[in-house]
Image (cartoon, rainbow, N blue to C red; front, side, top):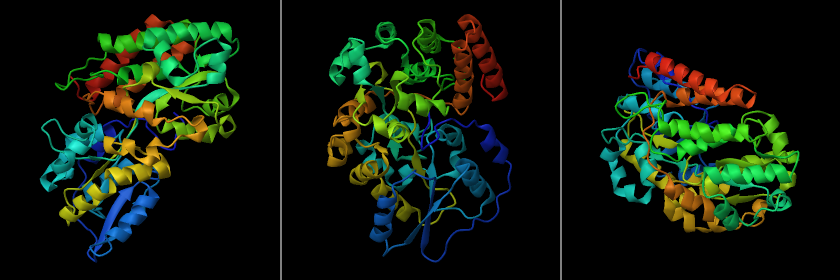
Length: 421
């Protein structure tokens, strides 16, 4: 969706292309400098500034913010052995493709990360771990999902308007479609939701399986995928969607002009809505509804295998991502904490003025706790994109049966090319 952080997946191909690059002698800072690499908005500037002061007596912490294709630049540095940082960020959409190359990184469990494992959401900790238990990525943030909605438009349709009542009325996806049908009949000219693709992504994200299982077998034609597909197609069949994709510029104008009443997304998506439509301040609320229990995005910090001063780097990471500093990061740049202890801190419990002074943590906190750990293969993001493309065609009029057939066929073919059984 339109966002300060791109959550579109990058396939394993880019990493594979670098696998054969030569590795020279690693070059690193030798003057007491400790380098940290990240991308714009990946960490809080305020927390980083505090870290520089906190660790001034032990190291000169410097931060390199990398624009463009962060993953490619980071992987190239690791493979070529030049300019290797002491600490490297890993985007959430890239972690699955980097776990198979765990040799490029340090197992953080060997540096004491396991001592604080209980402070972080179990599923997020597992997301940064290899199948055999090596921790490659230490959790930064997460993206628990919920349903953003316009209570004024709900009121016009005769629907409940308070978050708890909305969640009670829309406890699951069949209810989402039924309430959506009532809405579009009652409020002509306004769609219920931006697109069925949102429903597909969130519904799939609530499960325990995706497109490839841990045995590297393609399962993109199984019932759990078809279930998410059918609910997404239901949006089209019932005329509930505006057919506006979240990464389309029209999404911003649709939000601002009230072209749809519901938008599904992660906690950080609140900032996207606020930036796209500041004039709608107080016109939105957040409900768990059918969307809770899925996650979108959320990144990690890692220590390259060739880095030096690893013990100090681990100490820096633990400090940066402590509950108190995660709460501060949320207040600064809306990075939703991966540690539940932060959820009771003032930065998260304060009423949100944009959402009518609602305490949105009461929705996003429980949503985060409901997320399941799910194996995500390196090919997963690329495979998901094939289904989303077919759903967009269905919204444009393509027969849903043909869309499903074409999505599965394309995914099976791509899976074979990417080494999936």
